[in-house]
Amino acid sequence: MGRPDEMVDFTCQVLDPKSPWPCLGFLDARDLLGFALETPVFRTINLHIGRCRDCRPYVAARLEKSINAVSVFLLRAGRAKINQVDFTGVKAESANTVDRRAFFMHFFQSGAEAIRKGIWPEEGKKPLSKRAACAAILGDEEKEILELNQDIFPSLSIKQTCVACGNCARLCASRAMTSIDRVTFLELYHQPALCSGCGICIAHCPVGAIDTLQAGTLKKHKLIVIDFPHCLECGQIFQPAGSQGICFECMIKAKESIIK
Ligand code: SF4
Ligand code: SF4
Image (cartoon, rainbow, N blue to C red):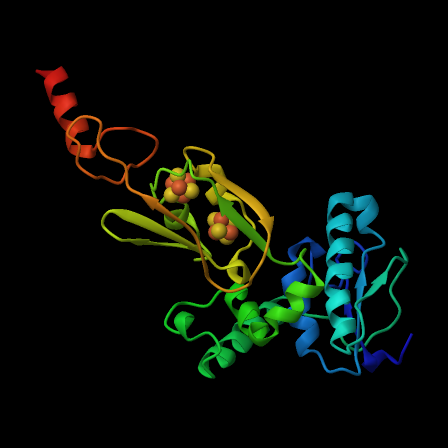
């Protein structure tokens, strides 16, 4: 163990009632990686997960995986790995307990600065999320990260059974999934660096066409080009809201004829 001012500690309130973190389950691999890359090199980051094993074993398992995933990259980048602390007693004295609010604000500010420099200009006019901020920090490191570790960034694939409804892009709060309507066909794009892996797009795809897979790139890339279907009634091209085979106009007409 180094001197207290050489350490940065993440603890939860179960281990240390004075900690600003109720639970460390808020952390994910990308948050940790972004934070570690911005932390001065002389500091060791300690993540205290000893109590998590009893309190929330699934959080402990996920944090352990994140620590390993991030550490692989950090070691290759010539940085110290994240230190997993399994001790379950009161933590050793440290001058640098990480404040939760400051932690997330930090990502916001780093992202804004990186975008100002033009690393991710296409995101420049949109509100920043911590995902975008983290993506901005990592912008130039894509190749190395992908070579080293596939656990940090989720990616998606879409089967040809896609009906071009666009629900996935409409519902993605992170703007990781986007679409372009080309009149006769739909293009779907995905940006793994922004994807939180929340699974909302998967859950709301009416035909179960979306699968997760390992990311081949962190940048925005085309997932699929899919023709809009032809209405089974009138034959015109239309964008379905789900898996229905007829267009909105024909649905209205059918409904009106039933009411009459
Ligand atoms: S998993 Fe979530 S964040 Fe990722 S593309 Fe789907 S809806 Fe967007
Ligand atoms: S069918 Fe599924 S994958 Fe295709 S656009 Fe709709 S929600 Fe997205």
